[in-house]
Image (cartoon, rainbow, N blue to C red; front, top):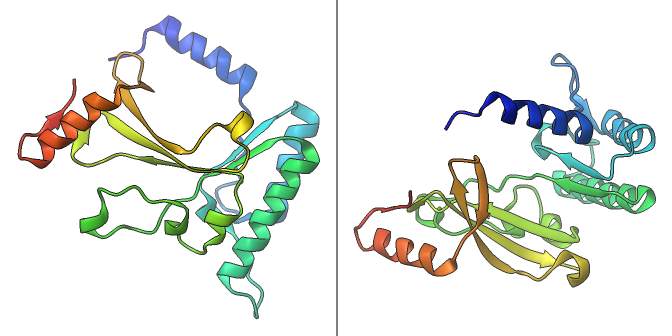
Length: 194
């Protein structure tokens, strides 16, 4: 569905009030020093309390000659954790998994499946995967595979969300409905939810 003018205006007002987008110039490489300087400015000058880095693969890790990617990822994730503690903010890093083989695309990738290192599983306080099963349209699996602090982060487990075309958002869904559509799709009936 197409957004109404008043919906667009409300979104733009919300965006202006609550979001600060930081991007390097198109002709520059995204370097860690630049990123941390901008993150600090966002917190100190603008009161940011939640920082999203998306995607991690855009960052130049600036490997030293004797350093592996795995070692560098460990350092960088440690630096993100240290920054979050120092400034009392949440830092969410969006990291994409290695490409699954065709037989595994139905399984949700977890922390160990992110390209680069097992540090993606071990370092975060909260690890979440959003996975869209190719057999069931308009649904997503939300896998919380790590939660160091159950309060206030919540439990681990899988949750189901359903895409709502009217609002262009995902909303909590009933697991039984998803499971039925999944079973139908895997027995030859295409599982399309409207």
